Length: 226
Image 1 (spheres, rainbow, N blue to C red):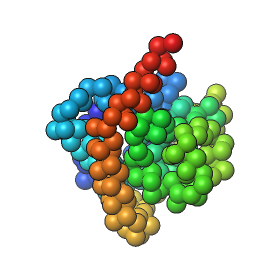
Image 2 (cartoon, rainbow, N blue to C red; image 1 turned 120 degrees about the vertical axis):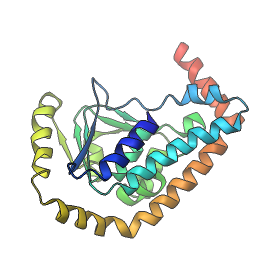
Image 3 (cartoon, helix red, strand yellow; image 1 turned 180 degrees about the horizontal axis):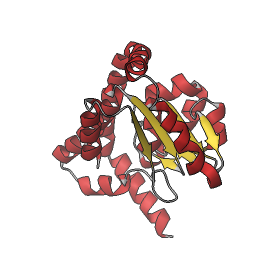
């Protein structure tokens, strides 16, 4: 899936028909996140497989960083893990009032990803970012809006009816003007984003092969079986 989304983003980046790219979820969740536990348990001592997995993460996040067109998210429900962290790279984030954002990396012996080590403090301040990334705080939609992480919150019952017409309006804006303005806003921080992505994935490789992460995954699995 990581490879497929990366490919689709790279294709859309050069497709003249595309003005706006929207990510949303099907069903009750925006995304329940990566199956990190299975990924860790599947690794064993095979460092090459760790390299492949983290390279896929780095390439995916790089595609978001470099994407030249408007990125919008219609967060229809809970967003967990990288589904939440990479929202810091989006231009606009609309959320259902039933949505929440959850990044339980330290509970799994892992680290921040999706450039969240850079974007979260920049968007919501260091203390709230620490609460999210270090302590696994579950941030609900209204709080996320209050801290600037979400653009606007809509009632869940009318979310689809309200959000899509709003996003549709963006396609009517002059394309080159919108892309130029976006580029001016992004170019100053793009180097920092790529640096954060590289460092996060470097540390992720270390953690995924660690005994600490393996034990945390085992504890998580055993807890869910109770």
